[in-house]
Length: 293
Image (cartoon, rainbow, N blue to C red; front, side, top):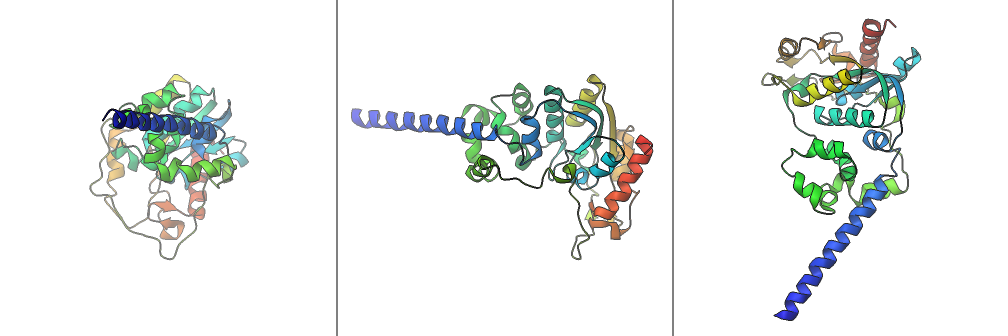
């Protein structure tokens, strides 16, 4: 029995040691990442100067044509992330401020995601390699139910989120394989798809009366003298429950409603995402209304 206990303890200690070593190795690799995703690029960057930073979900990534801002003399980057929520947008902005970014204007796509305070596990995973090296990331995740496991168990986060930050992603980061996430200044153009879903139902969607992460973004902008521009972006004609946008406007009167600036289905790739032609019409309106461009 004694020998068995000693053997068991050795296995446990060896497993713990391997986990610590692998955790350190993976973390070191992700600290070298600068050309794969928007989160890693910000995390590993030095101070930047921007006239305009765009935040939000895919409805920001696909709707704000950052090169059109640049063509008007406004240094811009679209940090919208497909699948992202306000949880990730708020954290990304806080990391920019920590890295001494000088930002004149933040444009936030704030509409559908106002209905929840959830994290997007697939997107937020990209912050987790740095959780032991950033108090901002640690504090942002601290309210999540699995925080203790993610923070205190070595290598646990890499195992749990293997499809996002596991061995495949670590290897691609190690060999500096690029993605298209940073192309077009972060804007991702869509085309009209013959089989695109041109119907949507948001009847049961309601904005939260006090969305924690939306309020965080507002507060960060105010504290750093950043002009905060929150907008609702267009959806196609065949949407049930379009009064959602009226509910947003009533709850958050400072948010500018642009959901009906582009409505024709020919300008949409799917009901919630404009194609490149629609995005250009929408962006031209934003430039005219807010920047006199």
